[in-house]
Length: 318
Ligand SMILES: Cc1cc2nc3c(=O)[nH]c(=O)nc-3n(C[C@H](O)[C@H](O)[C@H](O)COP(=O)(O)OP(=O)(O)OC[C@H]3O[C@@H](n4cnc5c(N)ncnc54)[C@H](O)[C@@H]3O)c2cc1C
Image 1 (cartoon, protein in one colour):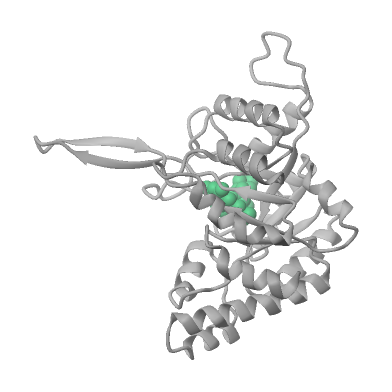
Image 2: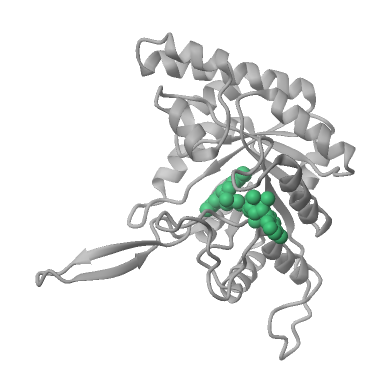
């Protein structure tokens, strides 16, 4: 079922969902199941599975020569989605990214997803390679999420790449996009970022999932800005509890978000990470209660495969 339908069927009740990473190459699916099992009691209508691009590295030969190698650390997004749907009978939402994929590869992935009965995708650009200063589009791929979204929207209209035969079957994907209440880090300001966001909505996005935030006023201001600009699709808050002191520095560095002073003061007052985890969970419970009151359609958790903190928060809310 489409995420928009899940939300409409909930009649204003806030739903619970979460995101997982596919297993590292060479590991089994059991880790994924271990991360899902404890959270099923909160009835997630959907579970997101991230996608990651290739990495480059060097392998040293006995001769001393270095060979450049390209590999994916976490392949398997589509198959993990199929396994989740099969085992738990919930919708799985694969993330699609531009980086590392040609348009043809994206088209084939979308055909696989359609055949598997997957109704939702999250269309993203993806991050730059660690070795590149900025995002460089893959040759034959897309430069922006809006182009990827357009490809999915085209298939929903029966328009495929290279139409040399009867390719008129219309897919019916509900397309999600990323949103940044504190703006995307490459954007000069929120207004510019917002303009591109609106382009994606106008091109057919059905819902948004936000970057994590720790200050609800940022999310509320962003929702209000969207509504004032005729953007009326669901805006799903993405949430992650702090579990260690080093995240005070790492999360702003990686995700370009602010930490509220009260939260950083509380973390600084902790003696160890065990105490930090309690502070992080308590903070997130309060955030969630306020978001439910505000009418957030879904509370969506970035679990990173660690169910325990999310389970404690969800137990206090649902
Ligand atoms: C909910 C969520 C899930 C995510 N999941 C993944 C994942 O699974 N895998 C992964 O690799 N990354 C993931 N990311 C990270 C995301 O891919 C990065 O933040 C990426 O840098 C931007 O992606 P985007 O889809 O917002 O890009 P875009 O919408 O393409 O925007 C990127 C930047 O370009 C600007 N821009 C957009 N359109 C144009 C245009 N036409 N002309 C000029 N500038 C433009 C925007 O303002 C922004 O600054 C996720 C992020 C979120 C919030």
